[in-house]
Length: 214
Image (cartoon, rainbow, N blue to C red; front, side, top):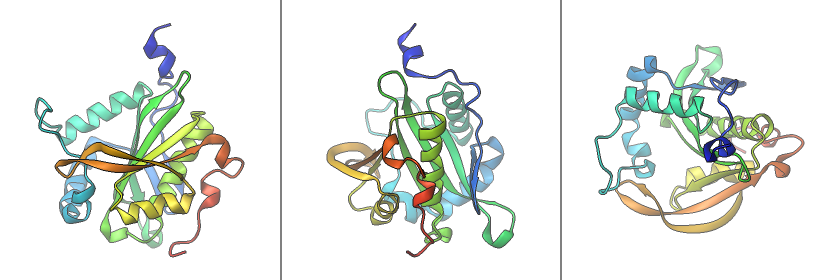
């Protein structure tokens, strides 16, 4: 057995995956979303910019286009290394709209069985419990379907809204990691939060959700 085989589960039947809880959905990234995604990012530039990952100066080659991102993410998903989802939201029974993105990356199996989640949401829909619901669905899928042991979320100390998400779901604060990720043009400190599978049994993260505003 190769090192790759020991760390990553065979891709089938774990992708594509679509999840739904109430008005919030998670579905695979798709090339057909390019216009909607670009519009969403453009409208939310000031909202998400301070928290967006960026390419450090030492990175080589051009950045990914939208099509390149979808191709790369889909390949990694089929290899069992990532869960790249768009967040959708149905407002008062209307058709679902693209509302954000949630990615579970760095999925490892073998003796590790961990992954890390990252997310953002359209400012238009902030405050409706969309991201906590999306993260709860993703976490439960990681723990109960993929049988992962640990799920991490790294957040900049200044990102109070994102900190509120992990607080709502009971993620445990572990440490401050200096200069952890290149974000908004600099290497930034991050706070690390985590949960273990046995900490969310038997109700899962979905069972921890509370109505928006609480």
